[in-house]
Image (cartoon, rainbow over all chains, first blue to last red; front, top):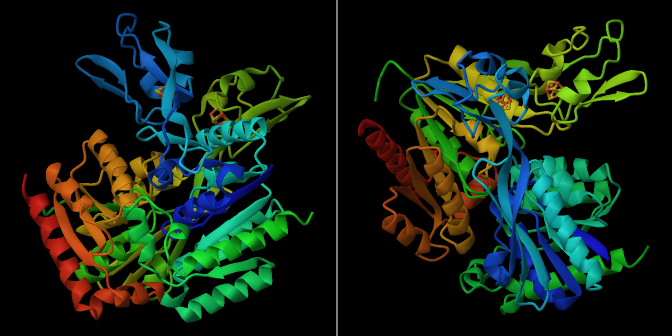
Length: 292
Length: 292
Ligand code: SF4
Ligand code: SF4
C-alpha cells in the first residue's frame, strides 16, 4: 500500500478540498485518513456514516481527593504549570493547565492525589460515499495535539487498508510543521504539497519542505489560486525546481471550489477546468509512485 | 475600558488561512494611525505578520525553556529520574543518563526529586523574538525553532515578555495560532476579547463551531469576523444570529484585497472596502469591551 500525505505548511490553501477531490478520483482503491484533527473537514465532503467511534485517551490529569487533603500546599509549590488553585473549598486542579507530570502526586504526604487518564478526543471509522472507509477524529477542547491522535488515526487507517487490500492510503495532514505533521509523515511514501502564491504560502512551504526532506520521500506540489499573484507563482516554480519537487498543477482561482463545497461535492464533480488538471496531477503522482 | 491597563485582543480562528493575519496586521496598522498599538505574532510555528510590517528588527532575543542536564560526576545511577519523568524524557542507558529535550515538559520532577542533585535544570533555546517600532506601531514576532515541537512554553513566555516590556502599550493585538488545541489556549489566555476569523463556507462554519466551543469553554468574550464575505452561503451568518454571537465585521470578497495580501501589502491604507470593514471591527470591539 502506498501512503500519500497531503500537506500545506500554511492553512487555507485548499489542501482538504484537493484531498477530498483525490479521494473521489481514486474511489474504492484508497483508504482515507483525516489527520487534520485540529480542523477536520473532510467529513463535510465525503459523507461518513460515523459507524464506529472510540474515545481517545492521551496523557493524564491530576485529581485531588479533598477528603484526604490536609491542605499542606506542597502540590501547589511544586507544580510548574500553575495548575493547582486554592480557594475556600481547598486545593483543586485546573484541568486546562495540568500537564499531567505527576510531580504533585509524588510529593503529596497524604496520598490525596490520583492521576486519571485524560480524554482528548473521539476517533471514528466510517464508510464514505466513495465506497471505501475513512478514519477521522475530533479533538477535545484544549487537548494536546501532540501527534498521538494523528498517529492513531493513521495506524487505524493502515490496518483497514491492509486488511481490505487497498493500494493507496490517502492522508490529509495538518497545517504547520509541528508534531502532528511529523506524525502524519511517519512511514509515508509521497508528500503532496498544496500551496498558494502568497508570501506566507511560499514561506511556510519552505518550512514544511525542510521537515519532509529529513525523510527523503518524493514530493509534488499543486499551486492553488496561481493567477492571484503570477510573480509569486514564478518564485514558487523556481523554488520547486531547485528542490527537485515536481510541479503537478497551477490551478487558477475558481469560485467553483466553494460552490461545490456548499453542495457537499468536490471540484472533480463539477464542470470546472480544474477537474482535468487534478486528474492530470493524479496521473503524475501515479507515475512517480509506481517507479521504484 | 480601564485606561490604566492595556487592552488585550486576540485574533484567532478554527483553522488557518481564514484571514487572521489579514485582520491583525490591517487592524494594527489602522489603530496605529491614531494611537499606540502593539501587534504580537504568536503564530509561533508559522509567524507571517512580519511580511506586512515595514522595517527591520531593532532587537532580537532568544527564548529558553528549562531542561535537565545530567551531571555525571554526581550521578549514582539510582534510576529515580527515569521513574519520575512521566514523559519518558530521561532514560538510563547503560551507565549514562540521556535527556530527550523534545519530550521534556520542564516540570522539574526529575531534577528536584533527584537525591544526588545530579540533574540541574539548564536553559535550552526554543525560539526567538524580534521587536521593531514603526511610528506608533510596536511589533513583536515570536518564532519557534524548527526542531522544537512544543509551542506552549514559547507562547507563555511571550505573554510574560509583553507584560514586562510593553505595559504602556494601551492596545495589544495577538495573532494566535490556528486551531483549538493547547497553543490557542495559551495564546488567548489573559486576553480580554477574542476575534474569531472565519469564511462563509461549510468548512468555515465547521471550524468556527469548534473555535466557539473552545472560547465558551474558556469563558472568553468573543465575536466573529466573516472574511471573504460573498464567496459562499449564509450559513455562518445564520448560525451566529441564532447563537446570539456578535458579527463584528464582514470583509467583502474582493480580488484586490486578495492580491494586495498575496503581495504583502497593508490594504487598509488604500482599499476603501477593507478600510470600512476594519474601522467597523474596531468600533465594535470597543463597544463590546466598554459594555461591562
Ligand atoms: S500533575 Fe503536574 S501539572 Fe498537573 S497539577 Fe500535578 S504538578 Fe501540576
Ligand atoms: S523536567 Fe520533567 S519532563 Fe523534563 S525530563 Fe525532568 S521529569 Fe521529564
